[in-house]
Image (cartoon, rainbow over all chains, first blue to last red; front, side, top):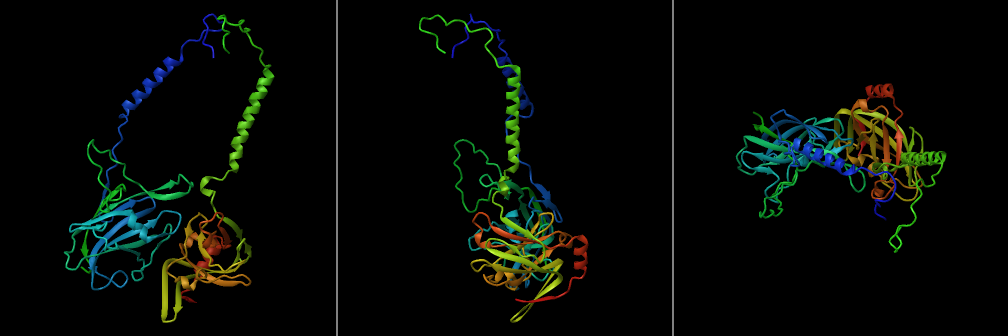
Amino acid sequence: MTSADPGATGPRRRPVLVPVLAVLVAAAVGLTTAFGGLEESPEPEPVRLGKGGELDQGRMRTVFQDAEVGAGQEHVGVPDKRYLRIVLKVTNQSDRTISAQTMDNALITVRTDVRRLKPPAGSDDLGPRIVTLDDGTHPYGQLHPGVPTTVVMAFELAQGERAPKSVRIEAATFVLTESFMSGDLNWLPVLKREKALPDGEPTPAPSKATRPPQLVAAEVDLPVRVAGS
Amino acid sequence: MIDPPSGRPAAPAPVSPRRAPAWRRLLHVAVGLALIGGAGYAHEFVLPPDRLDDPLTATGGPREEIRMDTFSARLEEVRFARSVRVKKEFGTDEATTRQIFLVAKVGATSVRKPLKLSAFLLTADGLRFDPTDRVDAGATLAEKWVQPGWWRSGLYFFEVPPDKVAGARVVVTDPQVLFEDWVPEVAMDLGLDEAGARRMISEAEDGYEVTG
């Protein structure tokens, strides 16, 4: 290409591009500054809920109804062991039948004033039994779309373990996400953002005990009843 | 264009180069716009990504034989029940529900090889109900072999809210081709409108009996 020849004829262009760019850049910087800069906004604090509290978890809507300690009943557990039962009313908000076991992912951690129940401390703990219990006698496993269903999550307590007085549940949310590869829509848990570690601090090795990095949407505190009282 | 090595530019360019007449430029613009518009319109025919691997569905009404490549099926009867009793060798399981049990009697035959067909209920608003686990799968067609050469009938039990029944379809599919493209499925319309569904549900029976 030839450079513009001062001798060439033709209208002389005013250098308009540079000033316009300068104004745009200044406006962008100004607006970014006005809205708090490029610092990430802090993640939302978990909602605090109590007995009877209701949480929209995206894939399902959950009412935290009750927590009780008692011997196993015919439908959940065996009679000579004690269980902590968390009673939920779950409405499946997705468009298809899901398993009651999905609530295992929906409630991230369960802690009592005695110890942590979920995720389990040892590998011999098989985790909670999660069943639907609509008529109170038969345990089943399905959550049909749009049907509010009673779900019981039962944790086995150790022999001679003190009965807990209260339980704290951390609940997650799901969001309908389009798969990058196939374009399919799936419910995926909302995850925590990676926190940047200060310089020089070693990255903690991932271990089984570390919590899955799901974002805690709500902390639910339930008092624990002794069954039959 | 590179200046000749003599250092002097070539003869100055003409002040106004020859340009196409206005009507031709307008024509070019029109053709360009038509091409862009056509390309945009052609995208109407492209399946959205979430539908690209949809099953191949043959649809039909009740009691109509619907053929697919690997099997044929027909919806023979629809009944409603408030409770279902499964008679077994050593006792009877009774299943109850706060919704309603939809009992679909489906006949099927295979084209080449024996199949076990699974089913789901698709409501008018697009909700997908799996067969209920309150009725043992052993009592349903899902656990029975459908073979080439003859028709066999069996039941599927669904547990649905009564207001979701109108306009629903029973969809039967061959789960063995789950990881292949183009899963064949047969969708059978219940043939029930709001009034028909209400009437049949009001006549629902207690203790529908089936052997498991």
